Image (tube, helix red, strand yellow):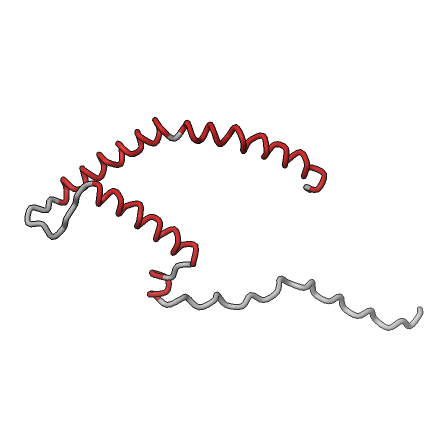
Length: 117
């Protein structure tokens, strides 16, 4: 028999790295009202858009005969009228612009094709 020293026991496989705890929750007001710059821009745009419809409906909350359901119905009616107007009238400029933009876009895609991965 040969005297060989016993082999070192194999090391246990490395487990997944230890996870640190979850980051602490943000305060309630920050979670509720925290907004990014882009979110603020979108919120401002939405306020302006809704304001146009409210003004178009001639809604005055200070009037004694203010009727919220009637105002909401008028806003819905004006919204549908505006959508109908947009559908009837916006296709012409869209088509006119597309006659210039789409060929330029296709040309740009063809020119930049070798540089895209």
